[in-house]
Image (cartoon, rainbow, N blue to C red):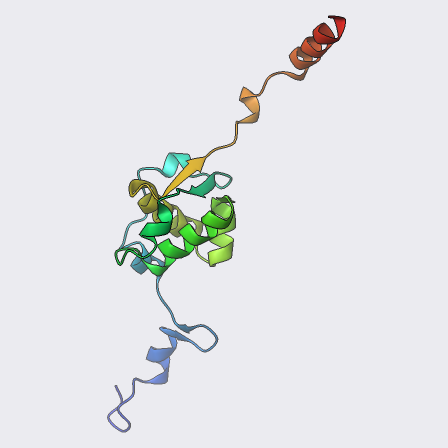
Length: 136
């Protein structure tokens, strides 16, 4: 702090304050220092996050951070992918994964993953089934 006016020097304040955004909250503060979640294997970029019906009551819970509440509210309107949530919240994907992991642990959301292309039926098999049905 400067003795003359009681304020922190400009260069020290600039690190923690953005003129457009206001005070900066570091991502690790939102996740309480965590960088991983147990559900990380299920949370790829295209995994859809869907709010549970009981999540409506839990949004008023004082234990949830504003970011947790925002994720639940957005996913209540429509299922959103992890990537869409990260972009909409303007947060790093890693932070969003940890926050979603917290919500999964609290049973406030569930995750639906699309079927990988390798597990989809072969087009040739589908055509043979269609041809067989037409032959009936």
